[in-house]
Length: 355
Image 1 (cartoon, one colour):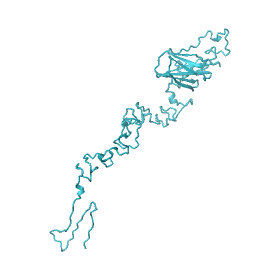
Image 2 (tube, rainbow, N blue to C red):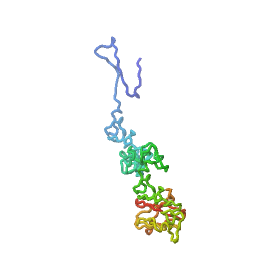
Image 3 (spheres, rainbow, N blue to C red):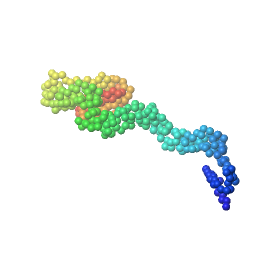
Image 4 (tube, rainbow, N blue to C red):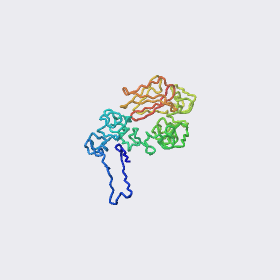
């Protein structure tokens, strides 16, 4: 009996013909009846006449011979939603990266260009492919440990295995964290640091809070006169001592002129302030301290007060009015303090006394 199989819905049909010799088949050939093989009409159709057959065309009904498909989703751009070129669900008018899908619209530097399209994500003028910290603004590209990661991105800037947040000297390698004086600053940093720019490094400076390149220490107690509240070590604080540079515990002053007898023939210490600054009254008696400036500054001035232990007592920015600054010191306790002025990258320190 003859059997028929419906192949009209089948794809990629392979026919195999096997011939067996018998008395009905001659060597001259084989006759096969009623076999018709036709090519699939769809395989030759080009509906939009763009030279791309429909079976291969990513937009078969609209001519697009270039087959442009920006978002590589298999649908030609000319067939996609005309208001969303990259198919990320963000319409073109609101999309910060129209031709690259970025549904999160992340824009690190807020320049209106999505990160996936931005060749300078942190907007620091350094292209991403050469930026040592591509997502954090760092135009100077500082890389202390030369590990290829900018300091602003590096959590171990000196590459000593100690994270910066825990490192007592974060920019100089010191894996053992030695800190001889227990002040929280590693020895490796103290030997290289000169906070007051007086040409004496902090670890050698007898007054690291005030510039004193002469390192004058009248009583040889290891504390410079600039920081010492008892320069002659006679147990009388300088603010009360009628002879602050020569020991005179009895404070004898026969002529009652305010100068101790032992100082009448001894030169007193003279403290001269730079001509650009005049501070008064010093010692402070009332509730105001006046800083008179003989130099014109274009910026605000930062005024900070420290006690002799180095702890900050106060710090504030002041606008200059009439070449002077009035500092309210009503809450300042009695004692000796360091006054620090910072203006236009200039830093100066002064010793003041509060009676």
